[in-house]
Each structure stands twice: as C-alpha cells, then as structure tokens.
Image (cartoon, rainbow, N blue to C red; front, side):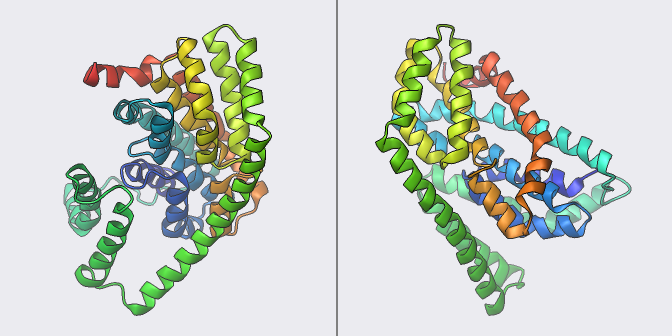
Length: 340
C-alpha cells in the first residue's frame, strides 16, 4: 500500500486501544517505535507527526478507554455499554484515517515498501517471528478479565513482559538497551507530565471561575432541538479540549452535561462516545494539545508543519463525528443488540 508505514501505525493504534486506553501514551510509544523509521523512509516530519498523533484518537474510543471509564463513573452511565459502543466508532475512525492516509500518500508520491503482495509463506514466517508480540494483548485481556491484575497493574505487567521477551526470548536487550529505554521513558513522561501540570493549573482556575458551567448553562438554555444542542456542545468540547487535558474536561463537564442531555432525550452512551472523541481530538490540535507537543518533541517537528499536515486528518475525523452525531444508532446498535 502507498504510505504503508503510516497505514501500519493507524492499525497499531487500533490494536493499542485494547492495551493502553491512552491517546498520549499511544502517540509517545509510536513516535519512538515508528516515527524515525517513517522519516527515514521519506515521509515528511509534519506528516509523520500528524499520523502518529491522530491515530491515538482511535485508542481513546476502543475499550478499555480511560476516558470512557471516567465518564461512566462520573455520569453514572454503564461502562459496559460504553465499551461495546466504542468499538464501531473506533473502527470507523480507523477506516477514515486509512483512506485519508492513502490519498495523501498517493499525492505525495510515497512509494509502497513492497512491490508485490506477500506470499502465504512470508506471512507465516512473519507471524512466527512476531508471535510473542501478538500474544501480548491476549494475555493482557485474559489477565484483566479473570482478575489476575487490575487495569492499572497491567502497565507493570507490560514492562515485565517486554523485558522477558526482549532479554530472554529474543536476547536483543542488554543492560545498555534497558538503560536507554529507561532514559527515553523518563524524558517522555517528564515532558508529558509537565504539560499536564500546567494544564491542571489552568483547569483549576477555569473551574474556580466556573467557566465551563457558565458556558454549558448558557448553551443549554438557548437550544431546543437536541441535534442543535449536540452541535453547540460539540464546539465547546473541542474548544476546551484544545486548552485543557481531556480527563480534566471530562471531570469538569460530565456531572453538568449528563443530566441535561438525558432531559433533552439524548442517550448518555451516545453522548459519552461523542464527548470522548471530541475532547481527545482537542489534545491533538494547537495551541495546547498534549499529544501534539509530545509527538513534535520526540520527532523534532515544527508545530507549523504538524498543524498544516493535520488538516486533512481533522476533516476525516469531523466527517466521522458528524456521522456519529446525526446517526446515533451507529453507536448504539451494538450495545442494544448485545445487552438489550
């Protein structure tokens, strides 16, 4: 495929949805693993950063999304229904972003990595070489499902698993590689936490001045149609997502908005997916996008190039969001089918 590495990063983000549940963590990990290879393969730094950052949006919708857990807890909405509902929007985002990547790669002349499709023997060989990586999400979900460890402890399990595979099975990691990985982790986490810390300060001032509550009350008092209401709230969520960390926005607005949208006749599961997608997307856009700063910091990419390359992907996300907004059954048919 044209833009094969970029396409692989989007599929990886979809798979990471079942592992991390954090858009920023996915963007940071992929920037380390795939970012420099993509740039060496001829992709521009801005295009690479935009693809790796926007892919994290899929991670935030597919379970076990941290944001959906927080929304369900604060809004008293079934987390099980939210998780099932997140699958279809997640795959729709994956398809929309892969189509956009394909069009952009064709226009830029990014050549496929291979000139022909792989044979069945080549696929089996690659599968055999990557079996331990493929098994990882299986062990993770089985462990969480049967109570071997909590979702929070799954991060420690991931580190232990990576050390076991890297040091013992593949024997590609020694003391030097472990120290380099720890150094990169401390640097990336420090950068992310510094941004979140300043975002938290802004969030404290904003909540103290009751800015979200005032905006929400003003908006909800003006619109009578629930579609118009959702459109207005969506604009506010994107705007706040640009300025504040996604979890801060969810914590501030969920207790305020959920009772109101229920009264307006909107399903809280439908609104939860819409809200989580929009506030997470805000973290990928200027001026205070945490995913944006994370990716650009790791790849040494300018914010101008990143923002310019993000526009086609933002349009693809907008189309999916409008589809979710105007056709709620896209989100609700699966939880209704499975849970009634």
